[in-house]
Image 1 (cartoon, one colour):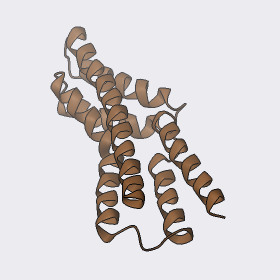
Image 2 (tube, one colour):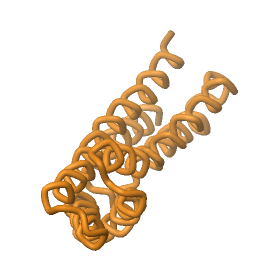
Image 3 (tube, one colour):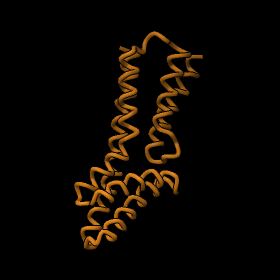
Image 4 (cartoon, rainbow, N blue to C red):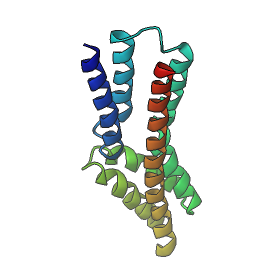
Length: 160
């Protein structure tokens, strides 16, 4: 029975990384299901309160990674406040429109259009839009790193 549960846990962890690139797949939910399977079917004593608290914190950071990195990079690349919020809205809506391409291109398009509406030169509007793309890519990297940390912490907690 343990072998089956462990196989499912490993598959869920792999699925979580697919979810970074295909947002329809709930990445962090897959990780949590893996944690719960271990806790309820293999050992309920090994995962401490500290483990669960840290995982909740990492989960909050993971959920905000796309939104915050998009907003930050649009700001750093010279975008207006409207464009910062436009990037966030673009990520949220883009999640449901032909993922992952909707998450990449919709924020870029929204930021560019908002900058043009604000009467910014095309070059500055394009730079702010590139900030949305940089934000998306940074969010992907951040999520991959955080998911690795969560999984490694889980493995170390169990085996050490």
